[in-house]
Structures are given as structure tokens and as C-alpha cells.
Image (cartoon, rainbow, N blue to C red):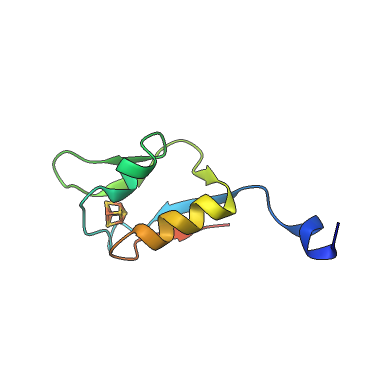
Length: 73
Ligand code: SF4
């Protein structure tokens, strides 16, 4: 095991900036247990603890067309 592996997080938290979310629901399609899109506003929120593997979090950040999803620790 290298030093960087020993400090690599097993999970990270993701969040949504609701001022930036442009709707569409890509996040909810990719992680239906993690994101919920409001029926009226079409704005996404994180449900549950928001924890994903660093790799999956990076995918969600990358797939959000507006840049609203970010890693929050
Ligand atoms: S993928 Fe991004 S822009 Fe689309 S609903 Fe989710 S947070 Fe909002």
C-alpha cells in the first residue's frame, strides 16, 4: 500500500447548489436513491447521507450539465 492509498477516502459527500441546478434530472436517473427532483420546481436535492465512492461522485459531478453537483467533503 502506498501513502496515497492509505489516505484515500472510501466515500465522499455530494451536494447540489440549488441556485445553479438547471433541472433535467440526470442525477436522479443515475442515482435514484441519492437525488430527488422536485415535481414543481424541477430542482434536485440530495436525499439520505449523500455519500458515494469518490469515483461515483466524480461521475455525477461530470454528468451534471449545469455544474450544480459538487463534492462537499
Ligand atoms: S443533473 Fe445537475 S442540473 Fe440536472 S437536476 Fe441534477 S443537479 Fe440539477
